[in-house]
Image 1: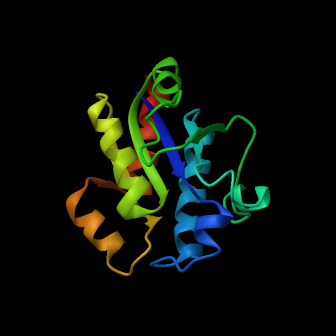
Image 2: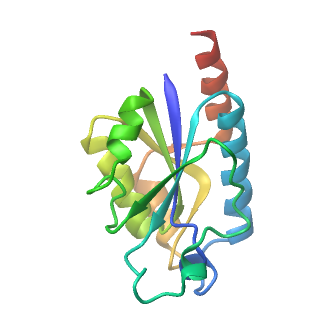
Image 3: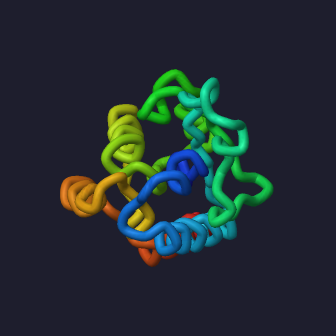
Length: 167
């Protein structure tokens, strides 16, 4: 089973220009560690960028923040809607790569993270949210999403990634 990590909206416009909760540096640490272990095992890392503000925001504000590590082989999806599957090529990309598990991380827990998680489930993918790898607009956003959605830790993902090497 192939795993895809979707890193949602970790862009200057959203996470640098407004308060985020609980902690940007901690979430980036979890996201980067998970992305590295998945890359090292041949799994997919996808950066999803919200371009809805593209006409009114400065181009540099739409870029991925420096705290998120990008690597050769990472894929990029631009979206106009909260659900990264809606009117994008994401579903086709995941199908081409034979992805069975979608892990969602990034910003904002109460919007794009949740809607993309739901979009993955609606399309028949197993889905989970990266524990400690999401941010929200409000202090209670992450705890509420974590309470109501499936979470996965990087240690479990490491185990699954190693298992998939044996297949």
